[in-house]
Length: 293
Ligand SMILES: Cc1cc2nc3c(=O)[nH]c(=O)nc-3n(C[C@H](O)[C@H](O)[C@H](O)COP(=O)(O)OP(=O)(O)OC[C@H]3O[C@@H](n4cnc5c(N)ncnc54)[C@H](O)[C@@H]3O)c2cc1C
Image 1: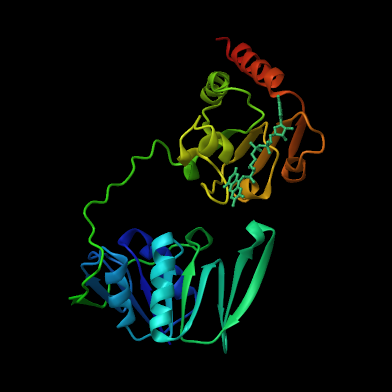
Image 2: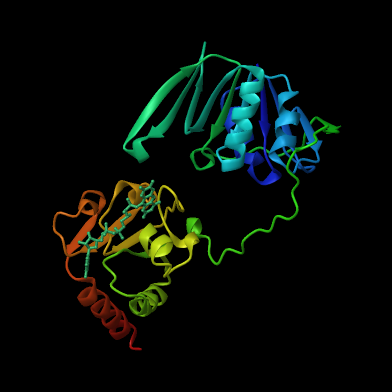
């Protein structure tokens, strides 16, 4: 059994962790830089474009290839599998390897899980959040520097990382707002509450994508960030599944909604039927009084 994992160096620990959990005999990692990771072979190549990754990975021999479930690697994985005429599965959250490969992944925006059996060889992209990074230390047993012959039709002129204001995935307390908030100026009281609680502010997609009141990196959900805070305080959020999948790993969910039948009640530990415009100022006052400020 030979498993090839491939990505930029930052994702390798989780990919190698996933590969090792399958007890493979040989693990090979393909990456863009030298990295200290316990694999049998580390292959380094100058890989910037999807075309180059596809060429480099299509050359490798393997039983199973694991890639991260990012937009680029989902495209690369599909192309490698198509070139080799082998199975391809994306967004996998669980892997079992017996006589055949069995994988599980979310369907219907997180309402269900499907389990699929696939013959080997196969290319799989995995949801990195669902896997633990490799715990053991040590470097690769051998290193190969690969020259990739790829002449892409499209040339990359420039790629700039957008400077993120915040990494919500690491926040301990989150105050999240939805369309129950009536106007942008009302974010001021939300900011005040968040600051008193030492919390980060998050939102539903309409607040960032439609109204542009908050930046995209603050929207939680299927098309946004996945968060796992100790406390998720949801204010004026209905609880549509596309939003809920983003905070399903939160320890405690508290929501405030004027509608007693709002779907968010089903996923809340504490559900307060109230107007956020009454609750938020009272909370701010209460915290201030307690702290004597
Ligand atoms: C393909 C696709 C992907 C999507 N991805 C995402 C995603 O990643 N993240 C996401 O968030 N959404 C996503 N959406 C949108 C999602 O379906 C919902 O439309 C959105 O989450 C609803 O946002 P909301 O709860 O803010 O608004 P609404 O559904 O309009 O809910 C507003 C809530 O506020 C309550 N309310 C109103 N006034 C008050 C008040 N004064 N006090 C207290 N409560 C009040 C109302 O009772 C209501 O429950 C996606 C949609 C599609 C089609």
